[in-house]
Image 1: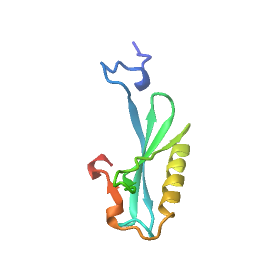
Image 2: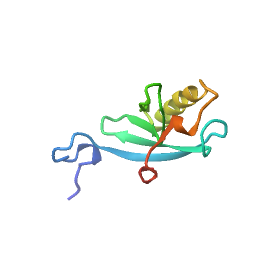
Image 3: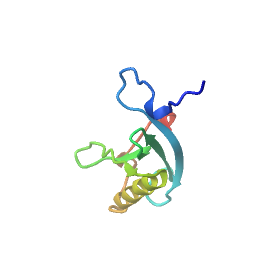
Image 4: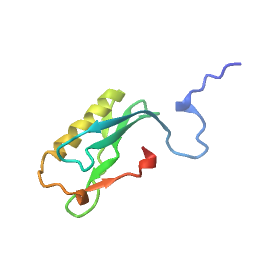
Length: 109
């Protein structure tokens, strides 16, 4: 007997949300980012949309981390949205230092 369930409608046993990784992209940026590369992980959410999360964030003026992410109806839209805002934010300054960035745990990416 074949089950009609897919990952979007499985029993979460009390958990509140499920998503699956549909892609991890390595981006090369030679001018501003220390180390020149960062990654963006794209998740497909059960709500049938996508979120793209970089493994690096910007520290803002009060030393908190921005936590921005790209959104879209497709994997590509979310990835492009994340790249758009990330690169726009990056190009607002020319005096970046390594302390201006917060990197996620490499194991997560």
